[in-house]
Image 1 (cartoon, rainbow over the protein chains, first blue to last red):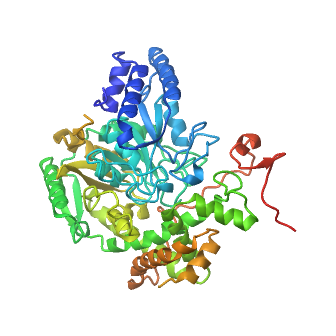
Image 2: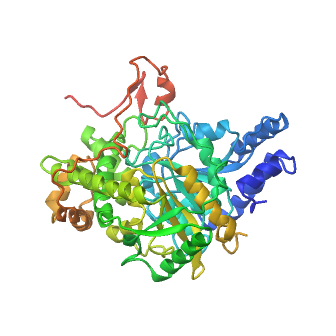
Image 3: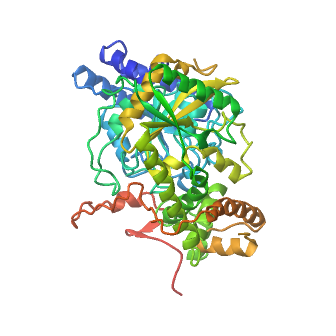
Length: 484
Length: 95
């Protein structure tokens, strides 16, 4: 049952071959049995899940089912869930029970999806390995000595290990695409503004975007259909109708123009990963796609500009954690400044503190022009590179990550080395473009992800392009050993 | 830009973060490396380039200035470390 996709589960549920209660119990049992070795979940919610499953069964019987009705899913612990702890992977929010549901959570609930729990993540989504979580690192199901990627590492590991057929993630600099690649699943970061950020704990507000993580593009299409859409509570939500993502999956891609940026295949890319990506591109050629070499000349500036923009916005967003209204408060503060500094000093982990300090520095008097304004200008150059490229091509392809999953601890001591694991994903966030990662091969028993970047609001095309690939390959259906 | 212990103390103060004395050298070292990375931006001429604040250059949507939220003070204060009579408690601010 756990090897079925969301699309397949929807069919068996609606045909009455299995009930949502049985299905939910099956996944809860798997989480209980297998998650101890992975640490993919921060909170598991069996009672609430079984209650939601019962309601879903009634809805299916009444003939009122939506595609996700009765399907178990997991939410990244960055999405606020009413009545269930939302920790954001931080000691700061270890005791925080959100007073409301995030829009994304509300929409899944309205669709009848059954939440089985909240997944582990890098603290406040700051990390690329899931090692910065207050709740400990997540292990990659393909090799438990390795990281699952981050920051949506718990979601990626849970889906890869078949502990949930789908999970939500968020992506500020690659946090859906990189863990999807490292865990061999499919993940989509939508266009900035496509999915509501309301109730999604803010890291860098001009970059953050929620999206689906599942085993197939078809499942991501079903999930995105439920998640996407205008929300007046998010001031940067875009008023634009949601496309029929499932309906577009089978569109013929003959004549599709694929751009391969030469900057994505240069120094720093593992040669075995490069070969796997080239083999995937060859599959696209067989499907009738045309390949064009392109250039995104400012690619090398994406990581430097990101490490100004993201920390600056983080330092501003995280100033709300003051030990007064919610979250962690230090013991016996002697005055107000002591309350602030110790609550924040003790409540945040090292990586979060580093980013708050970089952002504070970049925004402080006398440095604003040299850092923040400069980074915003670079952001324009990066965005212009994409704009020019999309005059020539329909989609851009390359690796999602320069290597396969690395060992736990391998990059933990050097932030800059860790930052460079997002070298291919960050530019799409700076430009606000949608991007996907699709399983496209294996190197030494570890998955490789193909990244597909599209033009603004071209999610339907990305999902279509990924789906056609998954119809002629089977990388997406490989299960890690021990989790089949 | 090389950051020393004094810089770290100043930045930590501005950010209202307490950093343990013994951790300061490591932060100085890490932040210096991060700034070295960031300063690769300086090699590019950006004269005349318009700064980009929003991915699609959209401006903030406005809504009518009407009350949209109901009062849920007790519900929200359920998460607060210390409250009394609907007020948040903090250490004495004015002597």
